[in-house]
Length: 271
Image (cartoon, rainbow, N blue to C red):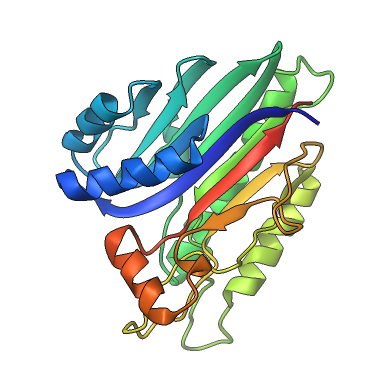
């Protein structure tokens, strides 16, 4: 099948406007040459200005609000695209980050891409807010069925990003590990006729060999179950970055130079 578009999602961890770091990020993005990308944890407008200058083939959008960490979305100018900031994904909390909804029109078909950076934390509050944010994503899928698809056909929808699926720790009862949270997400996705996409590496976050935390499975893509993707080693998503490095020292170097999150790359096939 032919490619509809390629897509990158990447949490670049406290991404500020240091020229040398911006240059490294631009170079790595250039190697993948995605049609659409989202960078999470962008801090400061200097990053936006630098990317506009250094990546002239893209048009850019950035979220706004009380939160310090923004989501920056770039899409190649050859595409017809519409961007909407979705404040409903703050879940009633003004300090949380909104969702970024990008709609692409390709061969008269609409593809709706929702970029999320959901609530972190392994407390009951953190888990509850994340579950609410996921629920809102599935409700958006149902709304797209009524509006974009006109109640007929299928809604080409996916949500993607740092979903912070870290489970919950509770001192008085059995804790919920991240596997339980992911199974709940997958069960809810199935009800919405969606699925969590497979990855070449499960763990996408790590703070390096000197950290007391183990690698964690935090970044995901959930897509309408009729959509198809190019496969990488039998998986839907190519995880790029520190998980691909062959030694801990190389992993530490990659994390130091870029981010503690790996990059997610995928190619959506035309419907």
